[in-house]
Image (cartoon, rainbow, N blue to C red):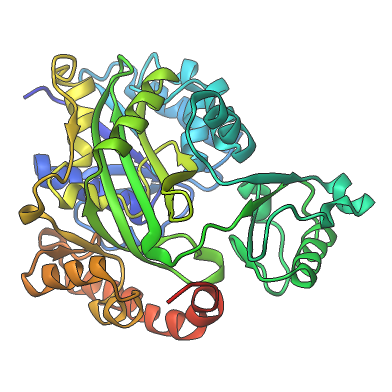
Length: 419
């Protein structure tokens, strides 16, 4: 086996999922570089987090990386940088040319990244390549100032989210959420007013709300090799999301799924745009026209993407096979999850919460059967990394979800969905 050194950027649950993937596949402990230490990687024996304040943005990022270039300049084996958050993926693409002399940087060029991370830009690319997406209207600050924003072209409820998630982090007001589902015009005017009078200056994305509960969502992870060929696609069927305002949209339960047509659509899209690296799509099924609508593409694996490794398609191996072993070129594309008997349910909350809050339907019944059969797993509870301190912290982290769901589920989830 070729030797390699993976470096993860970040310290959250996404980082732990990647570290666990490397540990499961190769038995190694990996290093992570991050601006802060977060709970998911604390007290871990499989990932060593090196904290550099200010590392998550420029100029701090490149100040650290200049030192790392000196440190790894004559490193014999490939050193693969893997971003575990949007900000780090953006920084790697932005500084790709400076870093590539020393490191493997499996990310698209910055010009394409800028287009895809902007929701407006992503929908333009969708339009160009025939990828279905929800009907959308862009609201600008000027539209709010002249009052034209109040012309809502969709029936209520509608979805509203910030175009720029980075500047959104600095905007604070009562009722602030990661994304909004709005029930009428009065509420819409109130929320847009609060957003623009509390310092947000960028565009807002107003969308036709696709009806249905969390189980209408789909998540798809794909790995595209250095020759721009899709080598793996793994579809997930989320059954529950986090209802907490700042975390709405984070998946809490994922059932593996298989859909040949969806795989074909995504493969064609990624290869046409010359993508490279890991991609993570958020998708929702629209029963009104029978189409899957694409919300966004994340240019890295997601925080819940360990469901891919859990189901036998180890997230770490694709990077190693591509950049250290160089064996992917001749391999057929893997279309994951065809064999139902080997399915594993991924949970990010205690089983009790899943059973209580996930909408009862055929998919939930399939998930309950997997739980009964012991075909279930999490990212953070790992037998090879189970010190008492870590176990206690993870139990505490999981236990906190009881209060979150009790407080926020009905107000942020229950009232807008057909039961």
